[in-house]
Length: 282
Length: 282
Image 1 (spheres, rainbow over the protein chains, first blue to last red):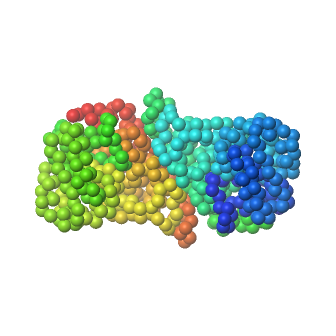
Image 2: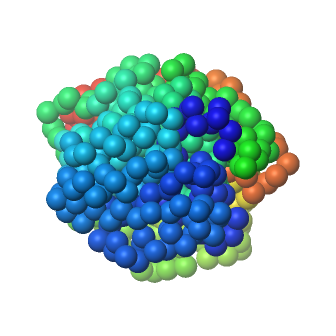
Image 3: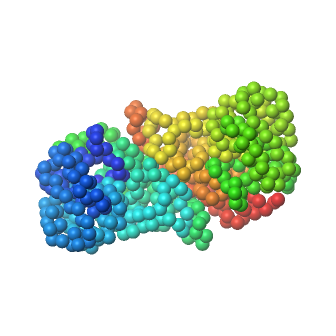
């Protein structure tokens, strides 16, 4: 793995249902970042530790990763245990499976395991996650709220503190498939500083530090920027009213597109260039 | 009915599944516009002429409309028949039920019945429609394309010419419920002149001529304005790529909000004011 890449800490945030059968593009991008280092799979979000851990282990081994380890985290005790921290020694990549994001944060939050993962990231490692493992990356995460309906002012939007590896964004997954734009709009209307990032299934964003991300995969990534919004009824008293919010900027990105997180601007990039950039270095 | 209102031709475009049990707010707004004139229900979109016609007849009679007529239109011959045109005599309101929008346009397009409906509208009448009956109002209508997925450049977006009672917009219905923002984005990216209007279930827009519309009902109305978009990959050659489009303006409107169709600007309005405006004149 080129030194340059190790020096750029990176998150690979996957909208769920990443391809595991065909070209496995997204998992390849995760595998690529392990290089000769460890790739640690944590099933903390799930209750199917054995099954899910084995499945991803096999996938990553199949993609050429030599040192694959599993970190089940079935309880808070596991997250506090020295042997759990040991498993993360020399990890280049930590991969969070899907499940329930609150299982991750309630068990891992403020634990030595969590500290170690942050350290791996801060020193140039990669933290990847799919579905629940995607939501958990940001400082604030979506943990409830229905899809496929209009967001109501006082209702079902439930947020919780996430791992905080990336600031000023909120990530939603299974985005187009579960019709989640209503709840993401509700979230960005609450605080326009936060960019809403909705990631479709079999689609991911790959961040480079806090500076930018690139889109990879089959679907789209919706970015909602309410920074210049002009009106919202969010603080109205009648909480069962549907949300109004005017002048939200929407960007729909697809594979290869890049988003500058500081300037809050998208830019295009030929999908082929990106494929080389992400995968060709191997 | 006040003279003023008769002089303002109006469309009531309903996102489907309007309330038929409780306060029936949207159907009340339709009924209100009949005044002492005829309300004609056309089931042209459906195959259940008897059942659907009877249901709406009962509903509108229950809401105080005296002169309710049914216009089944089961074939193109029906749309060409003199007796069909007769039914529309003195109609103040024409109401299109749901079903298949192409059944409406293929049977009615360029027929005396269609001409008569346009005349009713042009001379200050109201044309209302729900679901398929909503889509059919605009010059271009959505007739296919999946919901709950990312729009692909060359794929499933199917458009057809509608009745053309309102220009420069495209209407999509069952909007949040069927996760249709992807396909509406695809449509507005094709021609940013067109405003995308996505109407949720049990929600409607009430137009005043071509100038503005007001939102009524339980859900939201999403307006997509791609007028200032900066990039789209829509004309790329690889047609199975997901759509990219940058800098689309999104407005989420709820009951009471008004949208100025000429200035392409939303503005808020207390929901109570709107209820009085729409229903209080009775």
